[in-house]
Image 1 (cartoon, rainbow, N blue to C red):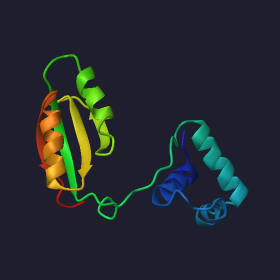
Image 2: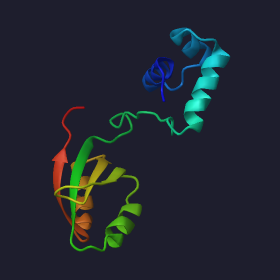
Image 3: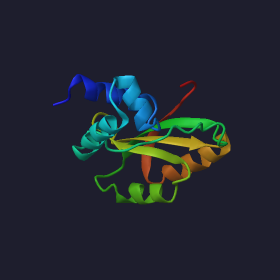
Image 4: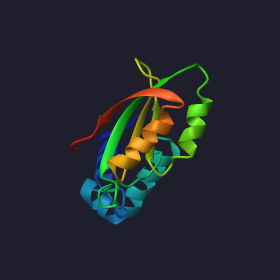
Length: 136
């Protein structure tokens, strides 16, 4: 069961996961070692699973951000999943979902031309609908 201090820790780490334990402690009115012990407890209990970063895709050279709803052609999804392994430079996330489609594929592309080539190859394995992200 999380208490208010745990919730404050999670809120602060959500804003900046690189915060020092000393600074975290100051923000939540604990010592650095006490804050560190609380964070370790949250990690060990599985509440905190990972630390991550947000990458500016445009500055990395990816100008097209797409969400693709995937409709498999059969119940055998392995050809699609194998294809994705060869496209790791484009794929951000592949979410298996419930609903009308089987997966939602989040991708990034440096150009519309590379998106088009990807879609041609993708269509050999699945059907899809495409949405381009205009603004975050």
